[in-house]
Image (cartoon, rainbow, N blue to C red; front, side, top):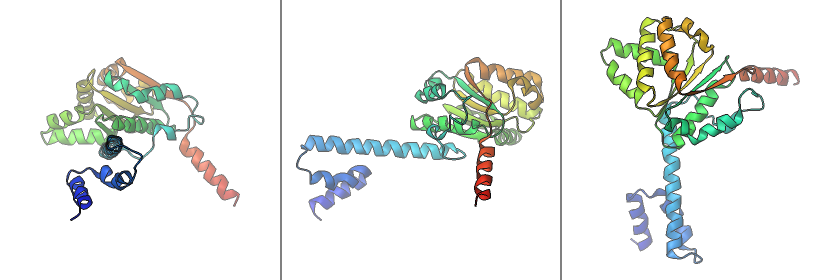
Length: 250
């Protein structure tokens, strides 16, 4: 076994994947000192590990699709303040345990914006999880039935950023409302939550069967929050119309 082969074997055992990949390029570069070569190689290793960690976090977060903030068409949706959204990329709102609420009719980009912010949180090494509201309620109710509610509440409470999508599309009964309140109460002033909803906050009492609990939930969500009311057209209708136009012109 040659020295080079042994070196590659050592790098593999140490799991220094990027350094192993770029090693030959630097060994043949006489313009760099040993220190310079090592600095650049270790920088590539750090970049590789950072990107791999972000990809893993994004996978674990269970986003509905891979769409970042840069993919959002702010020109099509002028009611969304681009500067306000982009300022959130700093993740200061997570540090301050603030919430974000996206309110608007179906198809206006609420889930896209929530997902984009969630992906930024993953890149910033912040534990993040995305869940549909109906699925969340059903999981909480099942856990309650199986006497493991405390465990699942602890699990959802541990995320630095929890994204709850599509509140308002289906009614929530008394038990679901109570369990949802327990989760929001645990996260209140401790962790950040992003909410997307298709109904005005004033009508949440119609979605949650108990208006008192609905008000208590809203009180905690809105207290430290940024609220975005999106009033534009549906992206889905835009795509459909463009497809129809294309087919007509064929």
